[in-house]
Image (cartoon, rainbow, N blue to C red; front, side, top):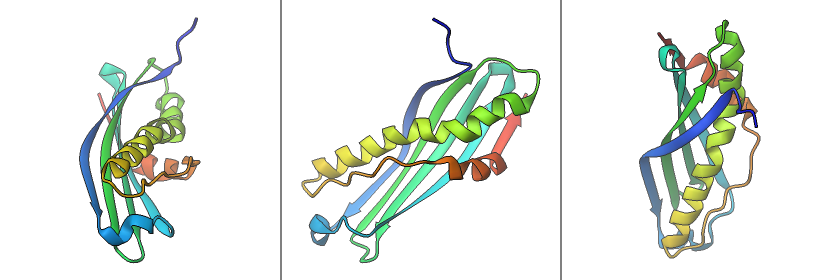
Length: 138
């Protein structure tokens, strides 16, 4: 079996803020969701670190969730940075997001309130922001 040229190696949660109040028990309607991405490519190590931030709140300010995570990836060396970077920009956020989605659902469920379950999402719109916020190191 051949291994992928771009592999997810795991993640770590760097920041976890979940602020809910009693009024948020049934307030999972009308949630707004935003993302922030950045990355670091270390060519000598054939590694890519994706920082993905997720922020969730509602119009009544009874829900405030902020999660920052780092996803670790490795890749096969390539002659051209564009060959490998297209994998990062198009796929890394989509690979990491399900872990953050499950983390948010689990923590809100354990809080004794109605769990917040985010939908599966197409995150391809994050590729331009990630491309602008990625640094290449030797």
